[in-house]
Length: 435
Image 1 (cartoon, rainbow, N blue to C red):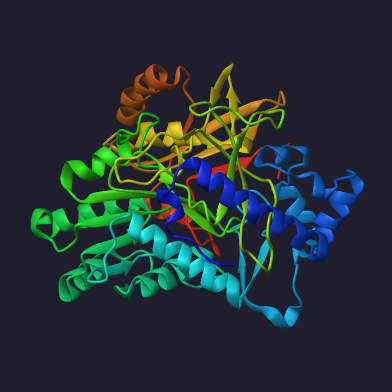
Image 2 (tube, rainbow, N blue to C red):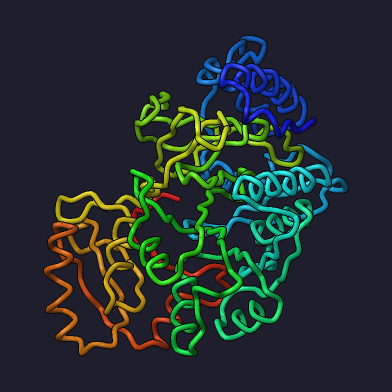
């Protein structure tokens, strides 16, 4: 596949024409090499020759995470000898899915992240400190590493955690950029305050943030983003990606949504009936990968609820932009008649100073309904915390979940269970949850 980094700057009509050509190549490839999609085409009487426009893609059934879990190796389109890297999803909503990459897929991944860092104002003279794991089959770690190398910038692989070590490395090597989970930035801020580090004059000027949203639907910083910038005036760039899509949507300096890379991915936003919604309307992010050899995906439903925008961006790109994630479709909670998504709860708790750490748990009660529990760590006496917290939750959520308090060590164990690659903020213990 030939990459086209300038495609994002061309009119949407040109982007769509390019994507249609790439889609036809993908359909032919899947017909020839993918056991899963060969079967899908046969079962649903799909003649790929009838796909003559991007809109015609809607005649093809969607693919789900469950399909990948149940038929993982049927998605493989190459011989074992061509696989050069095995990665896996984290498996937080079910058993992990292995994603196999060829050498060309690894080059595509590096190009994807190079373009992402360029979108986030990356420059060859930057020094990026990678505060995330590169082991445990974690695709994001290797993607960022390869992307920064392709950008031509320097990098420091410190891994996650340990604010003291992170700050020592920042100051010694003068790293001007960090790649991390946004909530960990709060730990960096707290450590800096305790040890008299002048944040305003630190070397760090920007942060590429993964895994958590920094903005509300109006693109203003949410409580987490505001909390960071209140104490540390660094430039924050949100990203959205998944192991399966092998592609990232990254904010530019305008902070008006993650830019689609049209030469790497086709994006649809679908309603509950698999119909595309209009710009500004919410639905499920559904993607088709372009240029992937090992395990390409066609109309893959991510489970994430977003909207998109197709207006021109001030950065000069004309590519469609993806909104902050409203929530995961399968994580939607119906609690006492109120519909909730975990990110909305996170945003409230991030804005409450006396709540130091938290985990949100949903489970099935004796009536077979969703029940909600907040696991909390606070430095206040428990009674004082409850008295202050309950009215705030009632006001913002319209309901008050069950509250359970933990020591700092107990909360650490809950957030970082054995074998976890990421900090856990949400636990789904419902009996009838979908995978």
